[in-house]
Length: 341
Image 1 (cartoon, rainbow, N blue to C red):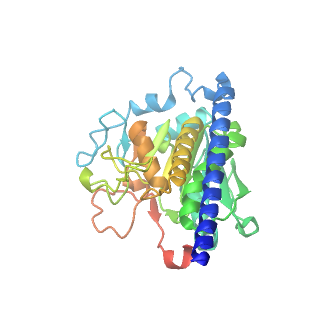
Image 2 (image 1 turned 90 degrees about the vertical axis):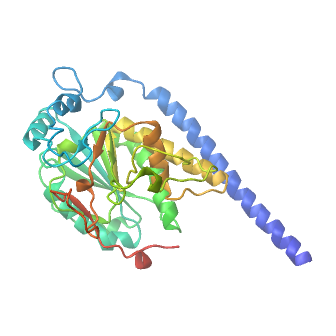
């Protein structure tokens, strides 16, 4: 009996320490978030990228989109955001405008643990062939093994930054904590160098043009497995105790890709991280981790641009009648060998 008592007391102390640490971290992050919000209100940092006419680039270009080119798929949302499919846009028009406006793009990718050896080289070499060609691109590789990042030959106006991060014991924590890492990187570095950010999972390979037509103020990706399904089959988090809780939504978005202007991506990352931390305090974990929180964010803050599943396709899906161009594909998954429990 005495042994059980001491075991219980030890567990309570450990649990209390964990909750206290989460609470302290949450308070510190909320405070720093508020301070950054006040100090980031300078006009230079928060003016959107504009064309010479003074209007947002993407709005001007999107006036020329051919929404009727793809009658069998959704090309516009109920809030008038375009859904980008092959045949709707003139790639040269987008490229010329973004080159003239000196658009710059940060690509963030996490390659932690065994994922680095398994996927990173293919991801980077294929990105050099297809991602935002002609624009200024900086790759931000977050890894716990910086010495193992492959040496990739980069094209003109393209560079690579390696940032060391902690490896968490559970893959779920790696997935969820990337939001804080992205937010911190935006604050410390990315916002000073790049207009736009795209955040990618590393277990993917570029196969075709992933160009400037994908750039927008706030960009979300339609999940390849869900874009044709009715809403009741969307796997939102249905647990009322979670900050990611949703009963309905517009679409089901895939967290393998999201992007936009740096300030909008930072808002998304901060929202998701704070929701994750509040869940941890309540001993809750969202169904699909950071993806569940991302879906909640885009339900409350509608994206200005949606990418069709052309931009992230799973080759296992047999019905690909809608996919005229495969731009990015899921790499084969070997979770049993790559993930820690």
